Amino acid sequence: MDNSHLQSILEEFHSKRIAVVGDVMLDIYHRGSVNRISPEAPVPVVSIDSVEHHAGGAANVAANLQSLGAGVDIFGVVGDDQNGNFLASDLQERQININGLLRDNSRATTAKTRVIAGSQHVVRTDLENTNPLNEDLQADLLNRIRSQITSYDAIILQDYNKGVLQPPVIKAIIQECCENDVLVTVDPKFINFYEYQDANLVKPNLKEVRSILGRSITSDEEIQSAGQELLEQLRADYLLITLGAQGMEIFNRNGASERLPTQVKKVADVSGAGDTVIATVTLALAAGASLKEAAVLGNVAAGSVCEEVGIVPITLQSLQNRLS
Image (tube, rainbow, N blue to C red; front, side, top):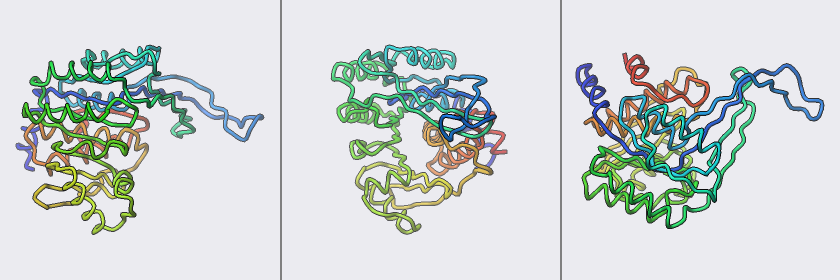
């Protein structure tokens, strides 16, 4: 990419409207310091200095899109609880449209609580309900998406297997996107992996690929073979496999594949890196980038956020700085 072409893609970010559908979460950070070991058990005692609440999961994908300049609508489910209020408030402060954020009083808002001492991640606790979304809420979610679908440049399906993206919802959204010429990309998990057939792009990580195919995949040849196999089974235009420290491998439907090495200089925290990749890649594709151009931008963006402690959305300015 020459600089003028790159800038034309980045400038298009502001004109795009993206919907994110999936499992929203609240990330809670208790930050403090350790000065002693507990007399009750051989564990550190963390003196808490501050508590922070941030958008996580599909909501973090939305936060990344918004900080890159896109207009964003979020569709998901929270509980009728304080954590749901915290999450809704965080999204509203980011100017993300939460009209598609439904309340379900039968479930708790998914919350991940991390205790950080200095720069050290000490422990994480999870509060979640992974029961499938009931049929009434599924219908409500779909109706809200359908009423807006022609206004979107792309829809991201962000699946953490917490119950929101059920097969009828997945299939209906992909069909609606195909019929209305809306780009649809997927960050899948294990349970509904093959329900995402006919999406434009699917982005699993290597652990998910190994689990889905049920075999060890280590060499470059095995990664390429697995990628082509999944691309054919999913009938996707593109497949992008994130490989952690090895970077990412991109696959085209025409049979071509290419490895992009990692752009991380020094890893501080990999939390949220996958959210950043799917957000950046989708927005770049919607802005007219090729698969490789979009993947390069996603790779650079992920490298930037991995150097920060905690889940930190990529900003357009930090992406531009990193590219330069």
